[in-house]
Image (cartoon, rainbow, N blue to C red; front, side):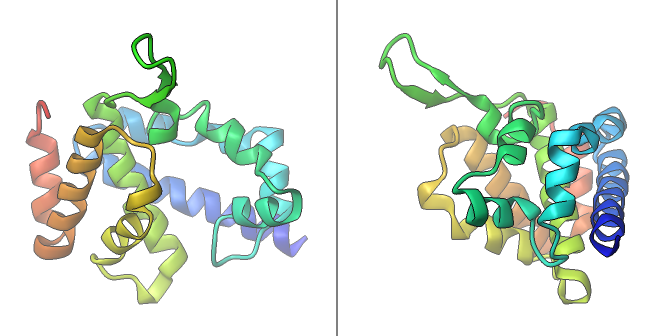
Length: 175
C-alpha cells in the first residue's frame, strides 16, 4: 500500500507543479492536460510496482525488463516529450527528429523543472534541470533547434531564476 500512495502522491504533486508552471508560462491549458496518461492502467500500475521515491519508476522497469512499457506508452501519447517528435524521413529513410511546436517546448520546460523539484526535494536548485539536461545531451535524439531552445531556457533558469524565465517564455512567440 505504501508504494501505491507514494506513486499516486508523486504524480499528483508533479502534475500540480506543472499546472502552476504552465500558468506562469501562459499555457495553463497545457498544464491542465499534462500527463493524464499516467493514470492509465499501463502507466499507473507500473509506477506503483517500480516506485522508489527518488527517481522515475521507468528506471526500475527498465532494469527489470530491459525496457519500460510504461515509458513507451507515455512518450507516444504526450507531445511535450521530444521522443514523440521522431519520425521516418522521406529524404534519409531513417528516423529523424522533428522540430517541436513551441507550445510543447514550453510544456517540456515546465515538466522538467517540476520533475527536478519533486525528485530533488529540498536539494533542488534552479541549476539542477540544466545539469540533468546536459548530462545526456550527446546521446539525445532531438531536433537541434528544439535542443537549443530548451537548453537556452534551462540556462536562463539557472542564471536568472524562475521569474525571468517564465516572463520570457510567456512572451516567446517563435523559435
